[in-house]
Image (cartoon, rainbow, N blue to C red; front, side, top):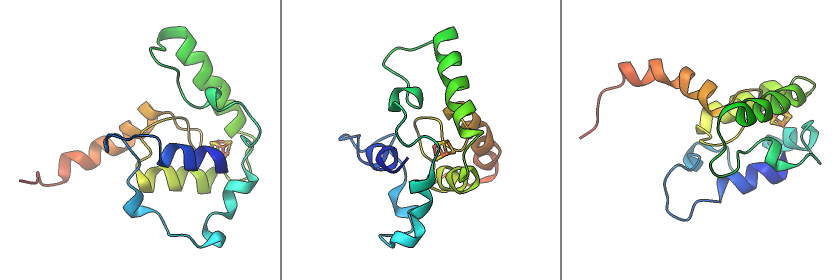
Length: 116
Ligand code: SF4
């Protein structure tokens, strides 16, 4: 997971659809140690992140495989909390797909005032 976290937090060069790094806890290693225990360490990142244009059953099967790995993970709670806190835009985190996380955010969007 460690590699995935840093990859995800730094992949977009256009500044959009990135994790909100202002919500990250900072460089204290104690706050990131959970990543070293992730069940996804050593797994192919393509299980957790969709390839370009992936749709339908291929996407569903990949997400199900990723979630099955998460289900065995000793740091699932920490991973899920991280993903929700920084609003990770891509991938399966804490047994949640992108759509799962969006469904959690959706009610929040309805009550927040619109900026501007
Ligand atoms: S919950 Fe899933 S994505 Fe998060 S560290 Fe564990 S295996 Fe990796």
